[in-house]
Length: 546
Image (tube, helix red, strand yellow):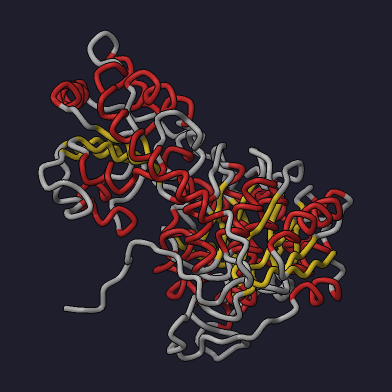
């Protein structure tokens, strides 16, 4: 005979889970112990939403499902903010929640609530285990659903009486496979021919790529295509680093003009959402042709103005296109287009650099970004979370490697920064991890400093301390002011190294001391007072007018 929770631990190990994030509580405690007994490192956090966020960061760094758990009732429900963020971000997170016993259903038992009804809108798949002997089967289902097609979060409900039931081992259902070996869907020959013809008629093409290129492991193939065809490229915030941003065909300061002047737009592995103004004028030319490559037919169906929809795996389709263009389209064809963008880049880059170098006090957030840019290595995992600092960081700090840039993504969830940083460090303990936080967003999950300290996951946390939420030069925003909290002292109280900075020339020395502490095994907090009136210019994402 074997307990249901023992089966859970064995199934998680067979699914390839090596790390999980959770908070203790009934009825999952013995399931956690069983997972640990099977070699899974379980990291207990200070809020379940942070557990889901850490699992998301882990998934993006390792390109495999992240894993998190919550106890019944509020414990499970607290996962939902992180799961919703993962859903919009298309990140595979396998979440499991304890639940009140099935044999007490509808009796008003402790923490009884319909957790499946709550989880279904924030996951791509959610289900409940009804028989203990089927626990391994459902665990495998969860992991396969998380990675099949377009990746995303899933949820498995684990009632207490199911977890604690004794099962005859001979009746246990063990699946043949826990993972997904997804077929690399290729584009049809006619579609590839259409794209090549469109390229032949184009004078000003661009590529817009997103995190789908990461999940498809398409970085090398996208680089090869860009190099061979000479097409300027841009990425979503979530897809940064898939090509290094010091590539000669990346023109950061010419982005707006490239969008408006492009006559052919390749959208690869990303949604046409608000980030790209849905691909519509005035951000893009009215007569520009759009080629969209996506693994999800529902995404392609949603775009009513795509000229050439391509259903397929990003890596496979990019490889097809490069082969199809050999001898017909070369980088020389778009030389003048690149020269136009390069001239805009040459005109704007020095002015941008001048803004970054400001010595003003209070410190301008752009100066803080410059100091971080010049301090970190090319392979540092950078997490940015906040409002103004997120936008300033997006404009000024480049990325060079796939999966090495994390932020709140299209759902705009505040508070992801520190959990993402801890999850990233758990995924890649060999990497430097720097979290650049706004002070408002930091406060949402600040106690995860304790998680980092307790579990020996040292990260460098830099806080842009502008006294509240967003910039407010006109002093009209209700609830904006939070004060200038000494988060460095809070960090010290939790066992971190702390630094407090008020002058721009002191930023670099503080970063160096903090990094030395991190490399000796201590999480560090660098608290930098910044200008409360500094507002980052960015495209308006929302409109509340009719």
